[in-house]
Length: 354
Image 1 (cartoon, helix red, strand yellow):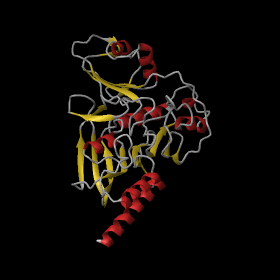
Image 2 (cartoon, helix red, strand yellow; image 1 turned 30 degrees about the vertical axis):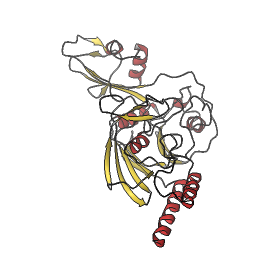
Image 3 (cartoon, one colour; image 1 turned 180 degrees about the vertical axis):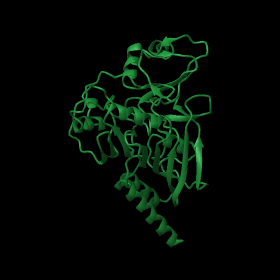
Image 4 (cartoon, one colour; image 1 turned 90 degrees about the vertical axis):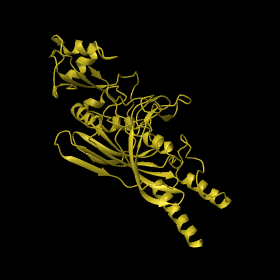
């Protein structure tokens, strides 16, 4: 029996996800009647695009677990074995050029690094973005490390966030750290909190949004919510209102899953798209008055934050070597902080005039 758990890579190369992991994950429970068979052959017969050489490489790196213990590719599977597999996506023919791009390093040790990514920085090379990405910066910063001495377009990456979303990312510096951190994202034991400015005044102070997310059937550049079980993959977003600012709300979002554009899609689904999110309608005046002065005020706000108003503020995980729980938080970037202040001032002035 094979359950293909979440494969967080349903995107074009020009896109990044809010928390999409960069591995394929599978769980396999061996049938009762299975005869003894090498695990690489057993899995290659059952998993799409899993060649024996690819599986052998995964086993050599400790990425195939049987009953929670790593095994070699020569291991003979037995009835009832519970197999967990983590595999890198196949490498693309893409030369990574090390570039001296400044990094905002929040924390670094021999195993990992936490960076605060600015809005506008693409995470990894892809169509239209072959240089100037976070991976190019990492290749320069980590030059000499074995993990970064290859043409892997995603060395050390565990997850990613959209180009125009700012915030925290953890990067592995060793294969062992990459595998262990990836499993934490897969098993949903990491802690992630985002801050977003959304259109409208939410009816409830907090809530949970559910709904399968998949690529739109009308526009392949965006994603949408589909009826459960119909299309897409299950997604869960928890939100809480931090501050009500009249025609917009500042909200905190916590993710149970890591779908492409998840927060952006889910907030649009409940009628509260992110402020200035041009993919999901947030770049229009959706709430407020028709007065010219108000329209100009919103236009000025759009100029202050020319992107979706979303920031990955908190990231927590267990250190892959020490076992210590690590929690990191980052301040709001200037563009988001300043537009929040502008809305506060607008609300304060409007209240004073009433």
